[in-house]
Length: 216
Image (cartoon, rainbow, N blue to C red; front, side, top):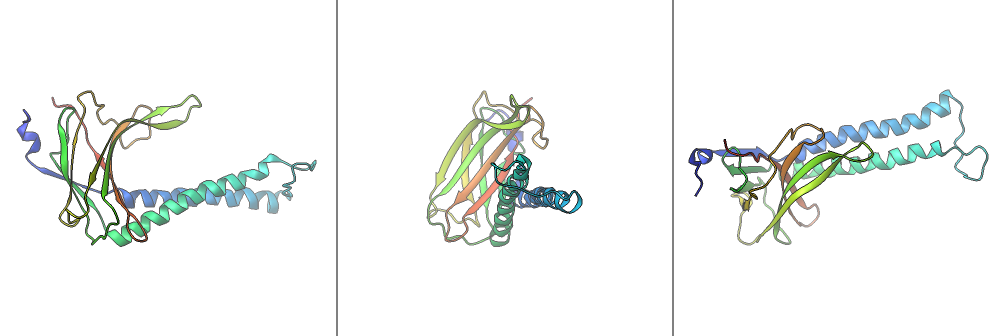
């Protein structure tokens, strides 16, 4: 039993981040695809530059591949945005209800995930808790590194998603605390809970942020 009963005196409700991520992906996709279009239109119409794709030609310039790379990169975000939007419309706003505002290392994160839609899973619910740290790589770019991960399977035949998909994870005693989770900075740490299950057509997926902090 915890020595901090006050920490569990209330239920914290956390809305899924799928919709927010979809909005962000739409913006990123628009910016990248816009840059791809500009990298073609500006040289052609303003600089009168011909695009030569033959590498054996003396007029070949590797820069002609830039629009291709940008388009492929933008397409990745466009697909992610479309899937996120479709999930939001089909499944509604999933909500995680956890015991307490935060959970400390050595304690148990427990609660339920409620989905305001009727699901007909083709398999179990898969829940995954991850600790992700952002660190500057040797090239100077920020990269995500998984510092801890736990998974759980819940039989779809034993739960009603409207009433809640239950979960319980024991946080390791040496776990990293959440730090600057809303910022893309070196050393930031975020904990995320992912829930997914296969369905006919579009699979269900939801993601939630979890606060892990040591007790004072």
